[in-house]
Image 1 (cartoon, rainbow, N blue to C red):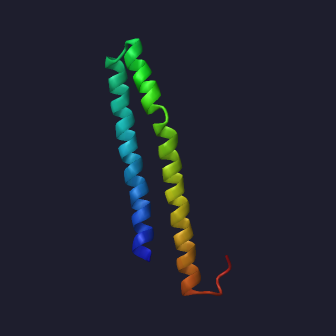
Image 2: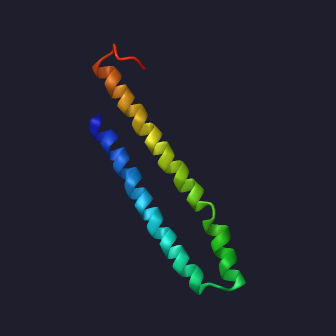
Amino acid sequence: MRRVVHDLGGFAQRFGRVAEQLEQEIEKTQEVWRDQRGQAFLRERLSPFKPTVSQLVAGLSETQELFESLVKRLSDPETPR
């Protein structure tokens, strides 16, 4: 069980780093795609990305906390919630 919890935290961190790299690439692309069509594409297709990533990382963190809590309660049922 502990391995799963550890993997969730690592996954959240890795995903966050990949998202940052993608954000940097988007910024570089915006410098090249300065026309209205390019900007519209980036706005329409990529604007939902950042909030979705934030939700995913938050969900992973919450799930990790839940797993840690379950591990503690299973190992010591007298532990308060």
